[in-house]
Length: 348
Image 1 (cartoon, rainbow, N blue to C red):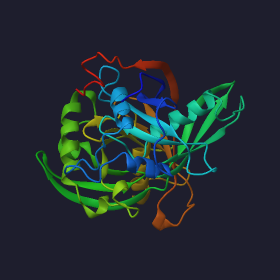
Image 2 (spheres, rainbow, N blue to C red):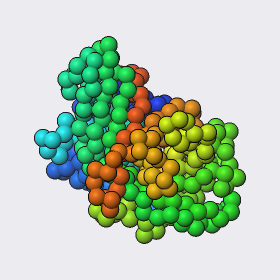
Image 3 (cartoon, rainbow, N blue to C red):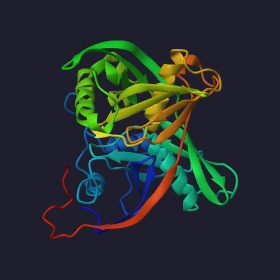
Image 4 (cartoon, one colour):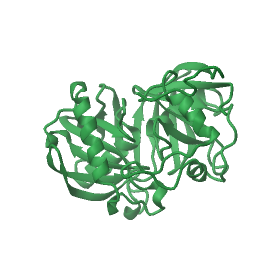
């Protein structure tokens, strides 16, 4: 059963929601964050969908918070859990309308701001502070920028991003396309929207979502989508359709729509997806030393991404940072009326 009451703190990062649940749920079994996520999943799901949720009290709570009438198809959030060891401040199991993800850059940024706002991590009034967070794909860092006693932005340092395939030829209903693949905490497929005759704008969202779902299904089982650490980190999580905008003095400028899980649209430029784009642009030689990617979402919000000087062996990938803003939108007390026939709600 879901608890009779659950309290959450909600943030948005560049327009993408993140609902934080830090108490009011039973402990999630497992010794690490990755094990906790694995315990909430069935081993496999239908083609193109990856592992699916198990029926657990935690999943009932996830559905209560993400589905209508308390949430919506674009809702995102996470359960705050203990970190893997004393080297991190907290851990998190990310969730969305279709299940549990391995990575979430915008959620990491929101959690960094929340940890400072709540005093979980002490922060000075006018200096940066690091919040170390264990996520299913590894340990990441949110550097919270402070000025005048308030948070002015957050920089997310991801696990290393690496390119796994270029120009994978696929046949879609809109024609043949070449897709690039990169792992950046999750596996992302990238392609120019104009390769499908589309523009990245709100009017084209139905066509963009349909194309992204078709591409994700077509890539199911492709060797380049497999992660060396096992099947629970494998499979295409998101499809990024992008278009070029005029370069800025700092480097490339692109607009994208990231469609993840089963047709969910990221309102932000996508944090871990930006890392994947940086890995591809670096391989193409488009990121000069110290250069930046200005990454714009379909809603017009911005992230700034940069590749750091080589800090890990090339085979392990590229260390990236993504900067944006995260703001609290509310604190909520959700209840489940035992006489409510809708129960935990419905997806639409």
